[in-house]
Image (cartoon, rainbow, N blue to C red; front, side, top):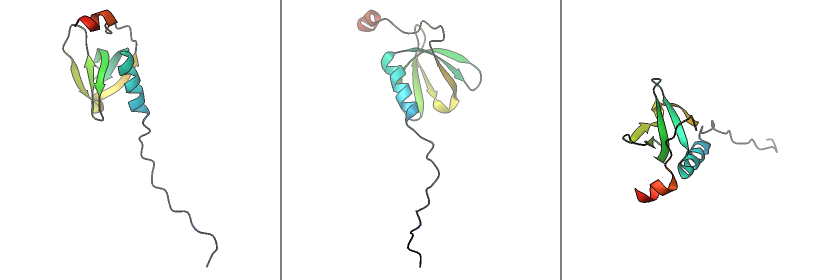
Length: 94
């Protein structure tokens, strides 16, 4: 019998680091204008008002808000030349 104990095998990494949630929270808190490119190639502009593990709510100026499943999102780009973010004065009066 060996005096060295074997280390238990580690399972595969979970694939979830929590960085996605932190990044989306940062975008949401700061109401950063974003361009969301969908898997079908369409690009929509707005700011992320809410998100959870399955979807993102994209708020848009003068257009209906969108609830987008994360599985349908290809990329989210900050800024992207959109004037989607409302000023603080507009947020308070609405």
